[in-house]
Image (tube, rainbow, N blue to C red; front, side, top):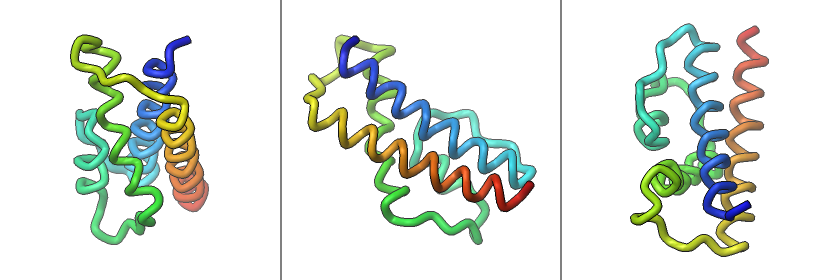
Length: 101
């Protein structure tokens, strides 16, 4: 499997995790793949730690798989970073979803 594809799935994990927070807050998530836009659209009192906001860098992977001619090569280090960022977002989102059950 290509590292680009794995990074795309990391982006998807972050995106869907953030959108799950919207649902837990009884809000409609924006129709976007851009993680910065998603964070900016959260209610103002939603605490988003800096390590979670750092996942905004994953947004580029949402485009790379869809438009391979525009994708940059992904290194194993890039992939490990993407995986770590996705895991941070997932854990953050899970804690917020659990708090609103």
